[in-house]
Length: 354
Image 1: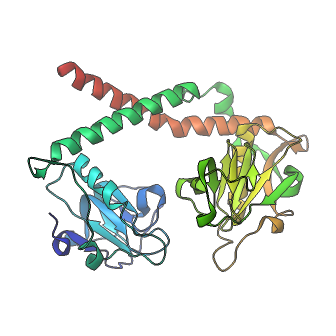
Image 2: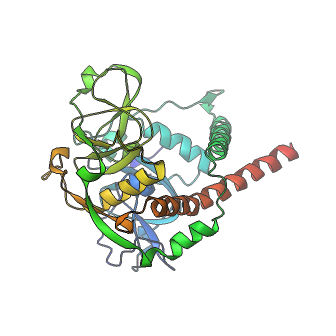
Image 3: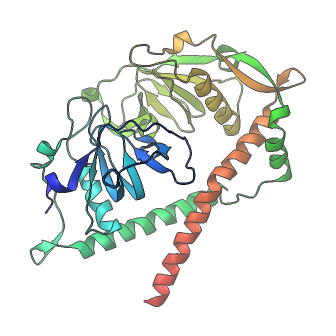
């Protein structure tokens, strides 16, 4: 079905000079092998040859820990290195998504399973058929049904969590506007958390399938690598995890953690979710760029690490932190709610015509 040599193209190790974190006028996203931000590493407005530009295509990471990861990119984009683009001009969006999900399940990943044209040629994926032909209509309807189901779940979640209201209150507006006037002070990790523990090693072969989220190092799926039933290194909800690279996540659920992850919580002070989210951001910011495979972080090293927190009358201003996080959540969720409403309205119009 696919001519791998003609339709799948490697990135050319181009050194794009102008790099922006956010999109600017006349800039294009540059896709690399990272798994966050849908593979967008940065944006550039460098001049490029037409052959360097791609449109509405799938990419697959060809190097690193997350090799084999497939993502879809709508619109025009450029490539960095360690990436392979899969041009499928005759397929629709839904068909590409269907194909991409199957390719993503191929046995690649880690540092020993790099996908290459030579290996992809011999890989097999199973596609739906009808009358001995590929059933593209089924792909369309299947992806459409999945999207409707996920949008319905998202709508219900936003309503239950009260995140569907993105209008800022006067207090939240004031919290945003007064940020530059807020006083800050430094606080040690051990002064905020009376429990700082490292998870325990649990080899993959020893993991028993269950319902307990098991956290290890990494940012994919916020570090949750699977679900176990082993009663090993269990931690309570309302905790923060920091892995060996400094990646920090808030956990509002009970979980298990491996030995490459530190866990931080306070069982004497019941911090609010918003306060814990503020702590998480401040902690990750303080650790950013300091740890790697060559220099791994352990929780036992972090007792005296410091973060900056807003203060009022020489005490931590919890009220301000909660208001600020609430405001930021609304700003972030606004586009999600508007997108959700737009998709629901489009679905209603389609149903109304049928």
